[in-house]
Image 1 (tube, rainbow, N blue to C red):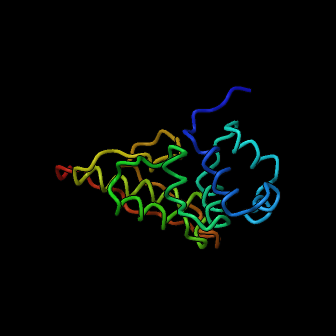
Image 2: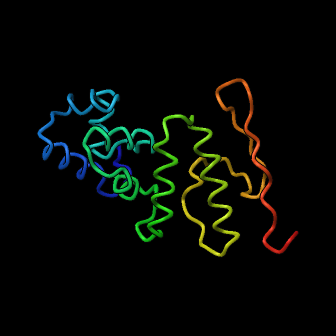
Length: 155
């Protein structure tokens, strides 16, 4: 299996794990992922989701943002406020994965509308236009329906 292009994420994780004096198994247990999966991440064979990176970062007591950048989820040049906003959304334990992605899509569409460049917040890869209305299950049987984002020129 060829190594994926995830920057030096695996090497960085291995270094951080060793600095924390944790075995691969200990980190896997602390992060709530399987030992083989974590091993594959460290060897560059798997690209973990933002949620897995968040769990690993928490277990290592390091910044999840750093892992997001190294994994190519966030651009290193992004505005610090945007990175923090995305990290807070991704870290919120009260939201499910779909809700997090919807919030990130809405946030990015507002940034585009206000003249800031397109980022990688839309990692859902669903191909939808950022001005579409998205709905997400809120976990209680209801549905969250954000308002459609108006066009920048009042359209």
